[in-house]
Length: 269
Image (tube, rainbow, N blue to C red; front, side, top):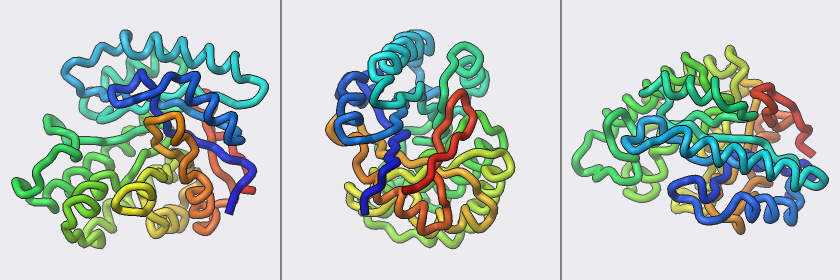
């Protein structure tokens, strides 16, 4: 199934430490694929020891302004950023909000406080349930704080714990805390992201999968964003049709984009 209103609100350019292509190449790829709205959301891992906020945000933000002008006739480019681990250094997150007029902020956790990214952990050294308990507890704190527009890849650690390491996880243990996360998102008019990157990884599913998206709708969730989490221009838009289908099958009639942090609904069609 293909959709007319294609959007991709999670992409990374060379301004990300793990990006591979220039913003211009991402925009061209999106325009060529008929994507209507693109957010370039480069990594701003707020707890990074070597983080220099202005050195990252200033040139990235200026480039996004250039892309908005260059592609204004064929593509809506949103000024975006992915603030990782924002609750661990709240004052720096606030600094980004106060000094850069981004349209759209993804909120995410790639690691627990003072730990490596879940990607790098040796899970033989940890109690997986203890890690996940802390992860969802910190996500809950992030949603209570609310300094973001859409919560990125809710089930991020499962990429590595379940898909890569083949460890069984009983996700029913986290039903209550995830419901509380969803209730916070609904109450604060925040979105939940359907991240389609997992469709092309070992897990072969979205983050989160459809069962969580349906539950978000059940507890009052209003806004859904869809993003490929692409780190290459050629992968921009990858899986977004599948993400839109999941949103629709979960009861959402529209996908959400954000302009100046305000939700704008686009019909899923």
